[in-house]
Length: 80
Image (cartoon, rainbow, N blue to C red; front, side, top):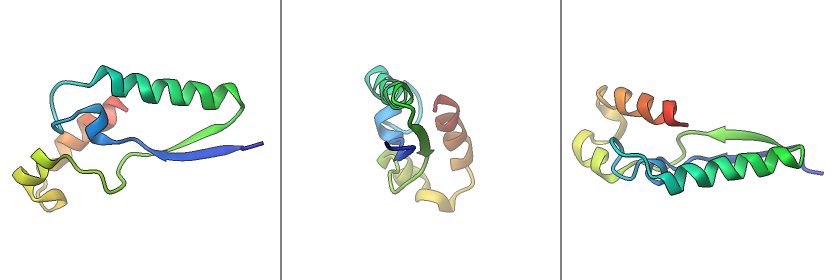
């Protein structure tokens, strides 16, 4: 059996514009995935940032070069 499964949580699937409203379908997708993995005894290993950056925030900040992104990423991580 599979002991662990690594996957990334897509920022834009949870919060399409990078900040603001949470997409309930995206949230349920990950909740269901984790629940299913655990029901089979598989430990989820989650990556929060893996090449997926909201376009609106990239346009505003220029990706990670602006320290203001920390607040938005923290809010995303809190949702996760």
